[in-house]
Each structure stands twice: as structure tokens, then as C-alpha cells.
Length: 144
Length: 58
Image (cartoon, rainbow over the protein chains, first blue to last red):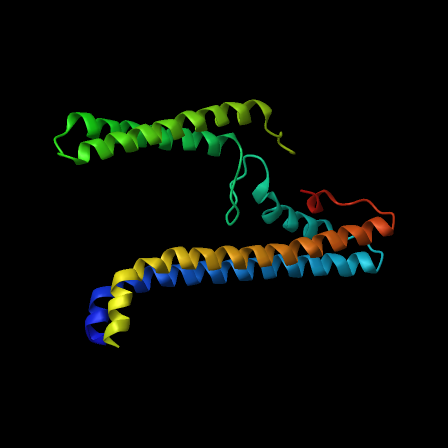
């Protein structure tokens, strides 16, 4: 395979890789931005001054809230019942789909595989349902 | 060249998990520096006996 053939086969990889690089750059610049804001705050504090309210408001808007309850972080994972219930839905849908495919279609030997996958997804759905119930009743509360 | 392209043709999809791992490590490192700075700022405020602004809490 020549380089031209390789490029002809995988040119589309440019797009996902480009997107990933953009994601990394966005993440790095975002953290730099946050760090610079902390430095500014620190210089106010070192001088014994009160930092301006606008600076604190700008700090309030995002990153540290990414791990807060019910707050969808842009870069961080998010926890909490919305996420837990979302998992229940996804696992249930997968379990239903694979079980249906295993029982009501003619796929030959693949039927057994589909049924097994359906059962596995069903177990995951039940486990995530239990987890969703627990986290709905015992999770941390909103801060604001 | 030929061997290398064949290898790539077989395992190009590894780009995604590998990149995801690198992404995770970079994120952890950045998060670490941010958290250190945040805690350092909180300590400075505490040493001066001042209130910790709500935005510095999590």
C-alpha cells in the first residue's frame, strides 16, 4: 500500500483527529484561563484587598461547578440522578433491543449471542436502576 | 513502509482509545495544577483571617 492509497483510505480520519486536537487545545486554554483568574485573585489577596465582585462573578460561572450536583460539566464527568436515570434508559433500551433481536429474528447462531447480550444489558439496567433510586434519595443537595 | 501501513490499516481505530487516554492524563494534570492554586489561595485567605469567597468553595 502506498502513501497515496493510505491517504485515500483514511483521509476522513483528519476530521476526528482534528476535532480531538481542538478539544485538547480548548481544554488547555480553558484551564490556563482559570489559572490566570486565580492568580489575579491571589494578587488582590496578597495585597490585603478585597477582590472585585465582577471577578468573583466570572469565577462563579463555570469550572468548579462542573462537579456539582445536577450541573453538566463541559469537561468533567457529571454525577447525580439525571445521569443515573439516563443510564437506566440506555441500558434498558439496549436490553430490550438485543432481547428482541435474539427472540424474534432469524439470525442463525447469532440469536444466542444477541440473547446473551440482552440479558447482560438487562442486568446492567437493573443495577443502574437500583443505583438511580439510591442516588435520587441520598445524593447531595444543590448548593444554590 | 509497507509493513507500517498494513499495521496502521489493521489498528487505525486504536487512535481513539489512545487519544482518550492521553486526553485523560492531560486533564488530570491540568486539574491538579488548578486545584493546587485554588487551595493555596484559600490557605492565604485563611492565614489572613479573612472569609473564603463562595466561588472558591466547591
